[in-house]
Length: 273
Length: 215
Image (cartoon, rainbow over all chains, first blue to last red; front, top):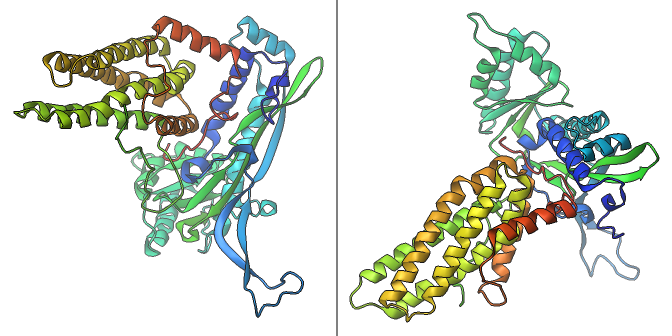
């Protein structure tokens, strides 16, 4: 059997129809959760074999090849940011695969849903809060302004968000602005109406001139400019499903991605805790 | 026939960022449509001149005729197989499109059988324009709209790269099969491919989610 790529999908005991159902389910589960992709510029490409992104900068090399002296030669090394990769394993029951082949419309793919949530949260966390081991500095960590406390009192949110927007404006960062906020905070906002019955979410949207983003994996919230070009998400292998192994009962698969992220303009965000 | 149309050379972003290199496939197809309309309008202007400047007509028509053929083949190889995979009502849209492509091809090839600038030639060119106008309108309302609403953004971008590469690799119809295709046979074959090959073919092994910026 020909193995087409590193995902080894050809080796899985999964017929074409079931693969399509698994892929469709993964796509449907992942897409609403990928908040970072809604804010960052996408500079992806190159697939699994791509290793790094150029930073366009160099560092001076003072140690030269033996026999050479700094009087003769100036040497520099290019700076690159390596792509990091992650896999989230999950399993699918072989009996479910059989049922999909029979035409079942309600396959049990709970473990895939769990893996999709984890994968999306992983990408969001890396983008918003960083991933030091992978040399990724997140948006919140890069932000140079004093952190503003968001708290749990929704009545204060319009004022707090307005101050964050004002900070960005005063520093020459144009809008529109977006508020990326974790699920708990987002729920508090959509549940709240102000005096006179005006929905808080509408009030915040007017303050921002942009939108509120439901962002799993974000602790607190971040107000960011959506003018573009400030945050670069560099994806090599976009989210994909690969095959690991199988036994009599289950097929072991994984969700995979390789990426890195960098903040081009740290001034373009304000972190709220 | 040689194409003289400058190939698309990339989006110049005001912020100088390296992305995206090529627009998504639906935008590239729209760009070609706009170019087709402009070329036919230019032929109107030339037809109004007395005496007819045959060389000028030839300079417009030859690249236009070639591009109509190459564009149809590029859509058949790259766009419609993916529309059949991701579209909401792709079979009907694809059957219509392949039938339209045949009408356009027939008229373009009919024009080649007549001396350029003659009444019979203008009639054939008019038939090509009519078939192409109907096709473009239908495709913009149906296939392209369907694909934008249902295909993953990353796939659209990846197909844009393929589409641009195909056009660049085929500046003329040389080496391409420009004969008519049986619409039903085309759809059957494409659907057979979909069910017999890796379901994520065409999206580089990924789920094709790609950028969600602004969504």
